[in-house]
Length: 123
Image (cartoon, rainbow, N blue to C red; front, top):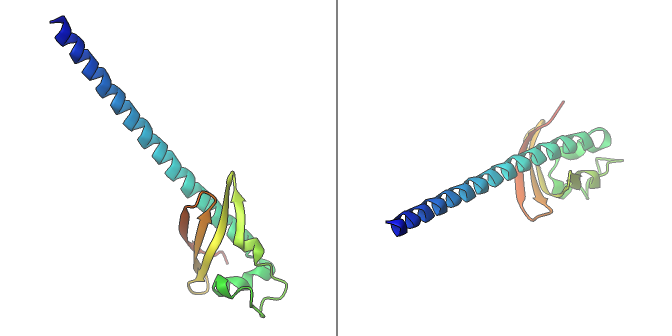
């Protein structure tokens, strides 16, 4: 009887431990997702802040055309191509305008992950 009770207690404690580990893992994943979304929003805001003045005309064309752009005198495309959000660095893979006031950003993060952001540009 004591052996059966000990085995039952052992199994129940292992079950509780497994449940706690799964809960902790889900919490970590949820936190990582929230942190990534927050970082993406920060990049979107920084990208828009850097795309004013002389850089504003760059947003009318895909990022692949920026180096050869003759229409954007005084622009600094490098300001839009990379940056840092908290402890995470990002690099622009591609900017694709979608009409006059929107576009899609494709980013690579310092950890190798990629993000795609649809932006609505501020007037």
